[in-house]
Length: 157
Image (cartoon, rainbow, N blue to C red; front, side):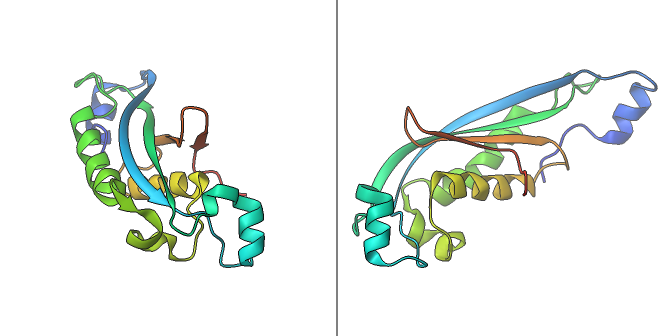
């Protein structure tokens, strides 16, 4: 598990001191294909709703994902998290799982979910959040194209 500086040390070194809160981020790029197709809709409804993205052979994107963390700066290390750890975590939980994959066929999470950018961002959030200290993950930003971006902050309705 990757985490920020140990809370015990932060408490000991920063008694009654307000620690600065900083946002840190890392970007990675991956290529993957998918098909937008809902099992809850007819073939005609899927084609009308998703258009060319419903192509039975799928289509691909060169995605960029940005993982943004928010936390106190450890007074000893000067870091919110060691970015080398975040890099390794993103490789294991995002790149190794999604890069050069057919998202619909190779990622079991999408067996019952449409592989929209929204759902991919939620998937990435869930993959990363469980490996970080509670509350450290702030946002997952997924760029499907240069013009289409989805941001997810873990909010539920």
